[in-house]
Image (tube, rainbow, N blue to C red; front, side, top):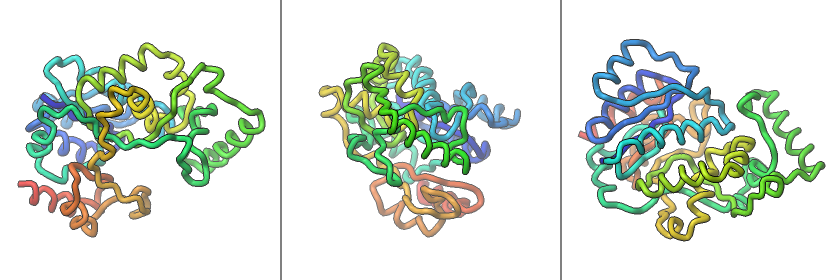
Length: 290
């Protein structure tokens, strides 16, 4: 048995349709951002399909809350001893191949499909991302996307650089820090290792809780520091993500212009899909997946 974990923060109708399609082959677990309104008729649809859903964490972009919601879903899925493989996607994902084909790819598969890089080697928007964990941030309280949040972020980097802040030293973190995307596919033992490691290393959890974009660091750092698990990682998560600005979003909100690239590539999911720009694309992918 395999499980799909969905992190959702908007568009309840689209998320429900995605979950019901996946539910034909997978156990589906959804975390709805606590700020979302989930109308009763959608709850009834999910309940009828035996789709698991919770809404406990107030999710904020840039904070640990996304990672915390992922951990929560993983713990829920692990309660079912029959689940042998777990996939993490967003509520803005869609299938690029039939659900049954995705399931079949991971039967008796002990590989971990995950992007990763040493954080000290990665620069994003002129910033060395190792600083996102070395320094302290509080984006569960400050809106990182706002104009104030952007200025605040630059100020935090400057002040902590001048003060020579080193959270790693204070917390006793002696791991190589890795980063990558939150969207992963991994067998049960790897998920259990991540959860158990986090639960038994409060210093690492504290680092993540006070870091920036920590959902992009936690699994990569835990697994890549384990020789046993690192050798099983395939550095490809088979997601189509367009790293360009489109329809006011970066990464891109996809539309029909992306169809050929999606179906001709080695992908199992694509993102981001959003009404109304992606409606025709979803329709075509559904037809193609029959």
